[in-house]
Image (cartoon, each protein chain N blue to C red):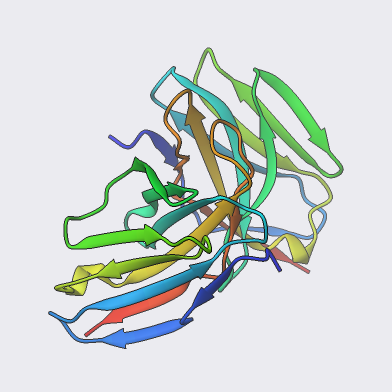
Length: 114
Length: 111
């Protein structure tokens, strides 16, 4: 167990809908990362937060947004969902930010858009 | 062209065999190199990391980096069925604040 908790584990929804994925980092970790994993694209970095502030952005669509709350948990909001958004979404946390930080991944949320 | 290329496999070998997993990368700015292991329905977990060219050994696992040819390898000796998983290479560069992953290689060790 990595100590990173993601809910829900599975999510089935329809095109055009909006969903929220939740992540609780390991106790004491200030940095939260969101990744998307699909069969054709692999594991893609979406966005990173550190102590409530956005610190890095990857290939995140404008339809997607995230935030990190004062208690350090994070939420990833996906709106106007499309079939291609179906993927496994991972949250990871680390103690600090910067190079060579060890990331601890949650078990992911499997999103299916029908 | 992807920044990190990795053959997705699948790769199937008998128990006890030596396994070689490889990645290539295109950007010489990448400085840190990691291998993650991902079991089915689980998140990736860090297996090994290295900074410099050369070899780094940890038990049955050896990570090798050749910066001159932009080539990363992971060797698994005396492979076990419990090593069956997807192995992802990852790299990071100064100031990027993110890991770039390879596609992952699905490995099966047959008893």
